[in-house]
Image (tube, rainbow, N blue to C red; front, side, top):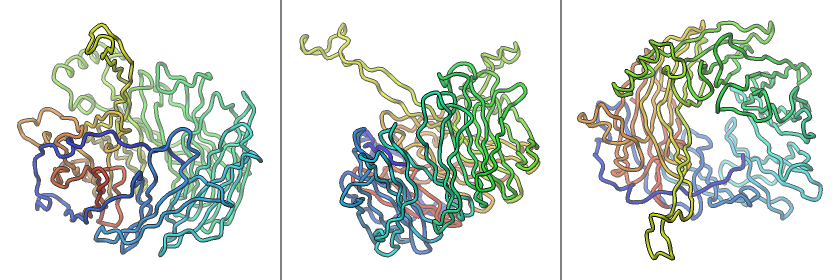
Length: 546
C-alpha cells in the first residue's frame, strides 16, 4: 500500500514532437472530449489515483515523489477536489502524525459517500506496527480528529509490517489483511479482520497456512458480501519459487474462510493435461467462485488458450469447466508472413516447443455479467533489461572502443496487446478479441503506458497512448510502437459480438500533455475522466460517450 514513487524519465521534446492532428469532436468518434483548464501542480508531487466521484465532481490523491528505499513510507499526502468543469476547487495537504511522530500513508478510498484514510505507525520500541483509520471531511478534505485503531502486528522479525485491504462488491464489507511473525521453514501465519462499512469489527482470526513461506505465496484475496474471505495462493515444488521461468514448478489453490473464519477449506486447481499459467477469481452473488485464466503446453511464459470454471463452495465441486484454445489466426494475426509460415511448419510437424502460443500476458480484470457470463481482460506485459557500457575513457580523452567503462542497465517496459475473452453463462467461450498495441518505454516504470477502460451500456471502450503513424493508411500493415513520439490517444470500441473499431481521439501534442491512462477513470454511466501532464503542468478532460 505504501509505495516508492519516482520521476518519469522523459525528454520534453518528445512530448511536442510533430504529430498528426485529429478533430476532437469528429462525428464518427463515439465520444466528445471537453478539456478543463491547464493547472500547475505542487513541487515534488504527482496524482496517483482518482479516489471517488460525486454528481458534481471527483476527488484525487496526490503523493510526494522522489522517495527512496530508506524512506519509511510517505508522510505527506494531498487530497484534491475537482468540479465537472475539470477545475480544482479544493486542495488540502495532510501531514500524517501520531503523538507528534511521523506516520506512514497506507491508503485512501471512497466508501458509501465518505472518504476514509488509512495510516500506520511503527513503534520501534515495542516492535509493533499499528494501522489507524480516520474519516476525512468531504468539505474541508481534512481528517477528523478521532483516530480509530483497526489492527496491530508484531514486527519483531521485520522492519515494518505491511497491511492491505479489500472491499466487497457491494461495498458492505472490508477485509484487513496482514502477515504474522513465523519461524523459518514453519507454516506462514497471517491475520484476517472483517468489518462492516462503518468499521465495526465483525470477526477476526489468526490463520496458519498449511504451507511454509518458502513454498507458498498469496497472489490475491477477497471478501464477499457476506463477510467470507477467499485467498488465491501458489504452491511451489521447491523453495526456488520459480514462477515464470523454465518448466512448470507450481500449482494454484484457493483457501476459503467462512462462518466467521471458523470453517476453512482448500480447493487445489489442476488441469488434466495442460498447465495453468495464470488465473484469477471472483465471488458470485450465490457464493460460488468464478475462476478464469490461461493455460499452456510449453511452460510458464506462453499462453495456448483460456480456461473457465466455477467452484460450488457447498458441494466443493468444479463445474462448467471449459478450455478454449486460441486458433492459429488469432495468435499470429499481427505477425509477418515469414513468421507465420515458420509457425505453421512447427504446427504441422507437432513441434510443441516451436508451436504458436502467445507470450507473457497478465490478467487484469474478470468482470461478472448480470446474466451469469463473464469477461476476461488481459494485457501483454514484461520488462526487459538491456546492458549499456559507457565507453568514454577519461585517460584516453574521449570515446575508446576498447574501454568497457561503466556497466549500466536500462529497463524496457513493454505494455502491448490487450486480449478480451467473452464467456457465456454455461462456461463456453463465445469469442475472443485482440487489440493491437505496442508501448515500449525506458526507465520510467511504464508511466504513460497501459490502458483505461469504460463500460458504456453493452459496449466497452479502451483508452491508451498510441503512435499516430498507426492511423495512416500507408502504414496499415505495420504496428508502430508508442515511445513518446507521434503520440496520440487511441479509443477502441468493443461491441458485444466481439467486433471492434479504433479511432484516433486526439493528439497529445495538440493537447500539450501526455495522457496517463492508469489515472483515467470512468466516473459516470457515460462519462470518463482523462488525465494528462507535461512537466509540472497538468489538466483533466471529460470524455462523454454518445
